Image 1 (cartoon, one colour):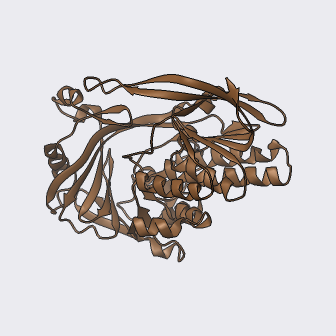
Image 2 (cartoon, helix red, strand yellow; image 1 turned 90 degrees about the vertical axis):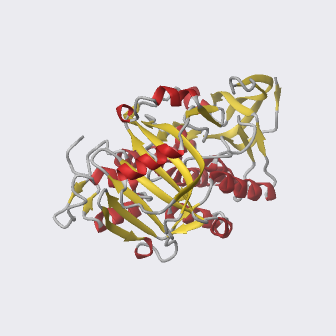
Length: 424
């Protein structure tokens, strides 16, 4: 095992959250090491929309113009049930500076972030994994493994990882943005309990003649929340919430035909599945359904870490939380966490402040996620709420593409108080 030159920060994970943290640090003149155990950036993802708050962050790190050029703007949130349209929110009524949600593929967003980092002299160390940490008063000593990857063949589609070499790295701070199986979280001994049952979704990307234009459609049922995102160029992504006992007698056969993404296998879905679900859930949808570009069935866990870090080691994004997918809240709040955490670390290093100045990050983020996950109380309909809102308050909270004050304002516009004073 050999040693490398010390840096101000090591960022584990080169998804959107880790890349945002790294770019925030690099633009403040800090030296960083950025690594990811995958061999390349994402080719497909479930998180595809950037909240207005995320657009503000991207503006701060000088990436907004590129994102707007590559993305598809959504300016309206429309609500449906089985009978049709029941309500809407216009995003421009909440912010003049960032009046939209932008739909953009994770692969495109990561490419833009990587290019910006490259211009600042920072490269991603692909096939590198954080394997151990040792915190000291003045720094953190980390162990990093460089991985040698070889495919397992067509029959299994597995990936075998072998450690090619290991090295020690000294750094002032470590940011773990390394996903739901976070090496940093496990090294810190932080529990990551399930806080609500997982949710099963069938996700389809397809061509359609339906004029979705610049709106996202949220479909509210008694026991499901679905969402249709426009992708531009007569394409959309439709996510249907399922229940295990609703998927039919042929589910075992579907499990045998798997789609492989990022080394994981997902059950196969067909165009007939899409047509049946759309007919049952949204009989008002009269646009033609064309070529099926992508379809998977995915189970989304809902988890919250018991804390976001300690001392010189901190978590952001899916390393600390997992949430239902409709409102794309986990990734977008993760971008906010990455930017805030990196900014605080930069100030601590510049002002020579002790790591204790970061303790507030843990308290604030836990409080935010307890509200988002309704762990301290359920949202409640006010007297002004329309009938279609009543009984769906919790679904609406998790489906809105917003967080923080913007989420509170959207909920109030719909006649919903963010939470009651009664525990769940």
